Image (tube, rainbow, N blue to C red; front, side, top):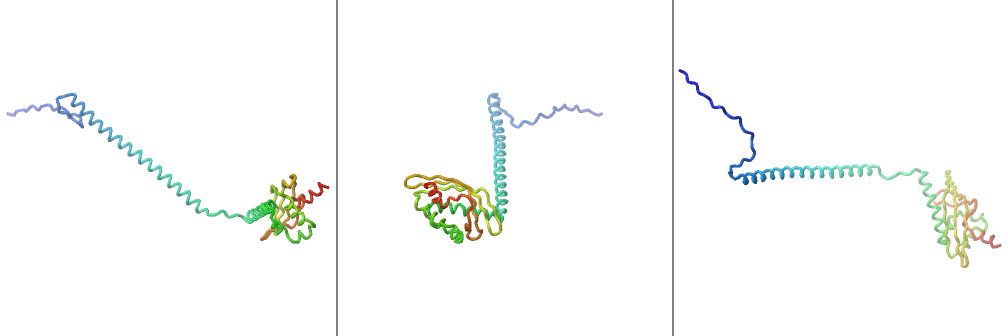
Length: 210
């Protein structure tokens, strides 16, 4: 005779509970549950903060990398190389402002900026320039370059100007335009002047007085 054994019906397994409380005090269990949940939140927040810091570090590293790349590219460019014409224009511009400074300083070295041939053929130009310097307590001259025409050996500089010559009794003001004819070389020299020149303005003053 066979005996049938009746199997007890088993209940399905309960979901896994991370924290279980065996205390009979409900308030105690609630406190423990809150404590464990707080730890979970702290761990979660800590992970988020760590991720945020990592992102910040990555951004800083990317910025530094981009800065280094730009610096390297700029360094590879090297110095700016000027064309021959640009070099000549810069040299001529420096020459114009050098004669302006010498004239305002009433420095007789201004005469060396003119070629000896031009001074010899320009009549009383040398005397008039010296008279400008001796008869003025202060000279203020503004030069404005309008145009520069260059050839192999010569450079023509179109200039308009305004000046003030302060004497013992009064100040004379005048303006005009001129073309400086120069020989390009080392050094540059003035070989002629066309138009109204501020250099030797004493000759114009004498005409006004007469």
